[in-house]
Length: 409
Image 1: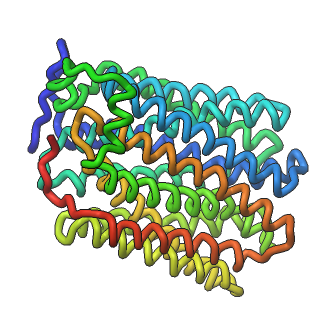
Image 2: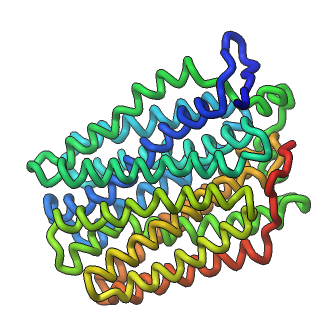
């Protein structure tokens, strides 16, 4: 078994599998929060009589926070370390999510969702960077995709909690949000048990200003990779949050009850796990580019099929394939992104790409709300998301380089 030797004082070595579980559980809690939000939006629509535009803004304010968090915390991960930022972001989103359970107005709920988003946006790229820097090149891609698979487990937990808890009482969505606050306790556990990245620890004395790091991301050496990542992140996040935050609500709009909609989305979510595991198996055998491009095209085709599905069987089947391919693509993207940069700007580069992508996450949910209000059908909306994913796939195909088993510097 590979051993990662933490160079921090009083920090014991940690095995690869233990690191994966520690980082993965943090990832699971993130997914649980985002997943529950998609169900809560549907519940709040009935509880607070929200318009489709207001529903869209809930998802968008979350993405605004994620954009800010990815940018700020990504930069500071290169300054103070991956571990410290990982813990801070976990605490931020956990506490804000728990407090939001007690809100009585949409304005207060959205303010807290901004801070939840900041924590989420900062934690995800920092966690993938930490894991990327802590495992050997020959298995780095597979381990990072397996890290991403915890997202599927978190979504499954969110779907299960939402199905059984939210419809149970008028306080159901508040109880669901309180459950998402539990990661705050886990973050305290991490402070004791998680070593920082060996690569960061070895180079933490190389002091570089924030402005120099940001400029270096767009230097001639890294500009092509940065352009590719920014396009992919924007299009993938735009379509993901537009589609998945609205899935339960779309099912309600198609005439199903709230409970039935939750049940069907739970079935679709189950397909996320094989999506991750197949991507993890292929990524070290065939390469990052092939997996990412293939799964993105699969996502595009599934989005088009879901938007045009007329029967329940077609909706569930297309939704399952959408979950399978989209989340497999996410896993490959998180493995691929940190490999584009050297250690001194890896957090900054990955965080900036994720931050730009979160801007897409602002417009995705808003677009759905606007187009539904304007009378456009779900088929037109999902055709737009299909086109966005195709652009992302072409960006990887023509601008990306293969990084399979490449040693990180």
